[in-house]
Image (tube, rainbow, N blue to C red):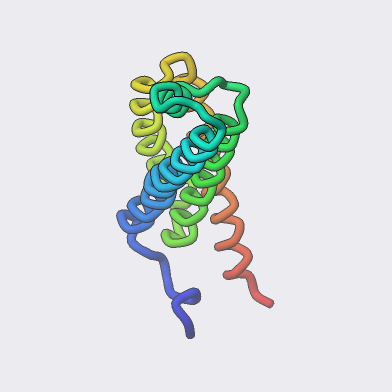
Length: 147
């Protein structure tokens, strides 16, 4: 039997690793995306002051902003999935706990960076994490079903 066949995992570990994927992954992806965007802007002759403004306050219709939202949302789904797959029990409850924590972090960061988008961020983050948790629960149930 491999580790995939192991019993339920620690709920604390499930939530912590789900948050690490969501918040940690979003942070790393955001830094990488900001660096890439800065390099592209610098290569087109944009001044350092303009680059700083465009990276910290991007237009909501820019590819940079949209890619950041898509990436962050995908990592929220993945975080919820990881949480559920590790827990292998109470996936919705633990997913909701993880979603609340992730939403709190995301909401605070968004409020600091872009107050107009706080409500949208809160709703999308919570929904994305719960979607991932439900997919993880379905995966757990599929694995435990007899062949």
